[in-house]
Image (cartoon, rainbow over all chains, first blue to last red; front, side):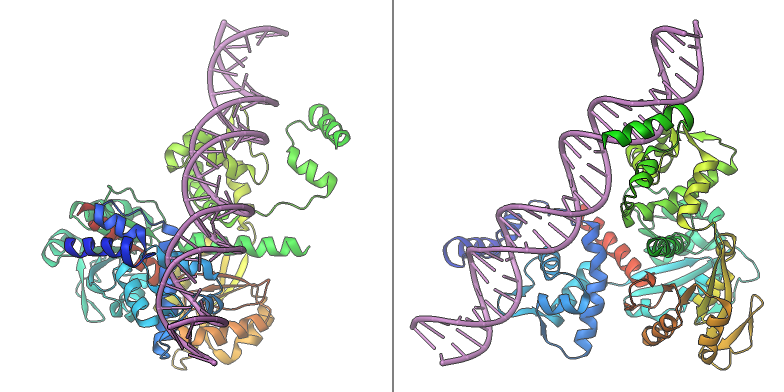
Length: 243
Length: 243
DNA sequence: GCTATATTGTTTTCATGTGCACAAAAAACT
DNA sequence: AGTTTTTTGTGCACATGAAAACAATATAGC
């Protein structure tokens, strides 16, 4: 690998002028990659979705301009976003859809499988357990847990519901990455502590409460009420504007 | 300009001391309110949650500094955010919790009731229909709709599931504000068109597809896959950083 | 009542994010 | 092979957002 980098450097200066200097510079000197903002990351899944559709339609290549028309964003933003991760495109040609799709997938980590458990088998927990799209993307539901003893042993999509007591042992034995919290807010904080203590890597939190976790544990909150209130605000705002 | 300042200064000091200057200024000159960014709006529900908790604990007043400690944001941001909507606070005192809670609630429109229907009575639709917290906030589930004829007539929390054919008439007769889409992406676009044609004010979209709606119809997307992919990205990023 | 203290509202500064414009480079055409 | 066209990558300027600093003003203590 180091050898190749040196070769690149040679080409860069003396032969292939213009090849992305930053990348070579960073790789050659092993400088830490500059952190990519969450604003950019937040847009990647949407790119992935559109690229997937294009791929399914058999489109081989696409320019930033055409993609910008389809997605209703500026072509400039598309180019800048993609360029954060290296030169995916080719001047005068555009971007190869399949390649770009794969690369963005890799960046998002969906080329790897993630094992998850769902804590709280209410309607929402069941909805997520049954949502096949996650499985397609490599997110595998491995365990279900619920406080309610009546649910223990019942099957949801073939997966048995386990009592909360088995949480720690199950995580340890099954190498779980992600814990999904679909429980009322009262239980969320203590359960999140237990998950963290088991060494879980990430928590996908649907409880309407802020979780405090140590650095290194990733948390993604889905606060449905917040989303609904934003909608409510915008309804009122629009009505006021119209007078 | 100088003249007006004198006038409102007069009112301020001698009559309605403390009444928000900006509002008077804007009203007097009929200046259009400056648009408030979605970044600010997005933070309001979180403020509301914390203020609600403080209120329940019997806390009467709070300073931006103390709130900033609790919420892990800067005091400056809190003051700026609140000040967008007028002077909620008082120098040397802080903010009255109850008053602030009420005002933010009004801004978000949860002092009014919103009538909604849920289209798609799968697990997710049922989860939302059963979620009592929305009702407490004035979001009333008035109708459920599903394509599947086997579901027609069945009750979810006492509400009968209706066939899709009744969508238009039901919305018209029941004065529905918000349509919730919990259906697969294939159906989302046509259904959203039907909702828009009925004059619905807003769509809360859980289908993994972008909806195109005319100006004036509010859309709030909840793309669960996107959220999960962001989590996945951050897991990988952290592991890379650690080496 | 006067002074010291607390705390907001506002101005200023700094950082981040986005759009535009152009140079570089590949492809397409002749 | 040379020229034109296409289209990326990138520097730059502008807009937006957030933090810091400060001025205004209310409270609290004496």
